[in-house]
Length: 357
Image (cartoon, rainbow, N blue to C red):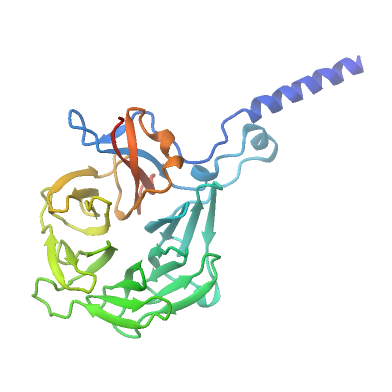
């Protein structure tokens, strides 16, 4: 009788383990049931909303059912109020102004690691960040009024900035130069990479000139141009790499092609300009002739919409981690990440798509 009971319990235990262990435990974010595409039919889809990231469970996954039964579930680490974002070599770096730290997501390892440096590297209000080819992390800290630099291991390297009239709101590194948005002094400062010596700044003209920056907030540097979102003038202004004014895109207004609160900007390989507008809560796309192509997002009602969006970045390297969310009829060209300061979808992930050939 005892042997029979023993084998019955053993059989039940094995069955439970197999049943619980077979439950889904994959990481990388939730998938929406119905695809969300922009523009809507019958126009040809160019952008597909893929998924979102709001806490560590979206990356690491949950414990399987058996471990939850035995050990209980763990509390996920949340993204509180993400602002800046950068993607480099399989990692996503997020400036979280709600926690005053950096969240680092490793897509290959399916890990999410909060980064709160101490000592000389302590952050107070990380707004935006950039990661260079050596995986050095540059953080524009508005409260420290410095750009703080860390190496690929997360060790403090240096901090730089002016002692007066300086509030960095964004940073971009190209070749041997570091471009920093100084919203306090209406300028873009250019520093020498490595020594962080101030080389020059622009614009040099005063208020009223077409190249003047009223409230510069974000920057993107292409191989031959500098793009600056001037929230105070409701425009995206273009300059040469040396700071000579070229032209501007947009104006104040509530129509398509206009802006209310232009913030994050990015440029794809075809020189299409992406502009996040925190007022419209959408992203507008312009071609290299500054013609409006389309927009995506909108005030939050459902996944794919935006809620006080801040920053945008494009990524051509990590398509494999999000390919499973792409509709089978589409070919994924590159990824689009947009931060939302509020709402359930803190990092919205979209794909630039085209018909599969």
